[in-house]
Image: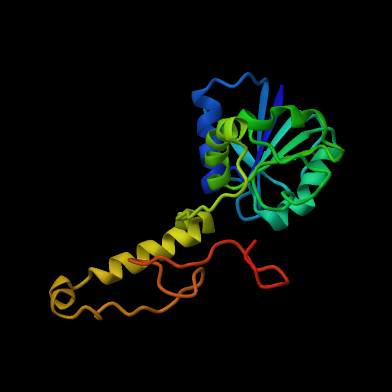
Length: 218
């Protein structure tokens, strides 16, 4: 089996590589893809290194399974190319979640949906939904759930490495002068950064995802 990881050098791609190795996933060949910025990097895989290929320029022929975590914009372009080359594409972004021709799968709940994938693409829901569904399925089976109210707290890593870097920078700034912070609770300036509208350090922002046309969150 020939497997590809798209977005291999990113946060999620790194975890994908680790899990493939830890679980000794049965594969014959593994290819790593990324953006032009990542192309040429050498990433460890078991006892060897694999060079990251530029996904925009690559030939995808011969790939059986493509694990994608390169962001929604990239996925909209690359996933159809991979599927057209014969791969089963499993996408981790939000790009295909609302597409009626793309099954939205949580393996413990609706693995049977994998058998019908008109576009050759499989989507997974976001992390909160994936964690909740295996618990909710037996409850629904026994009690027929009618509605559900859920409050979640999303990690800044959902905004990528830039989100984590922004948090880290603000945290280090906020404790740079502990004496000032002790006597002045407003010593830390609560200004927004590049990824979040307000300071994310020591804070919870009541918004995740993106807005749709009617003003609701997606």
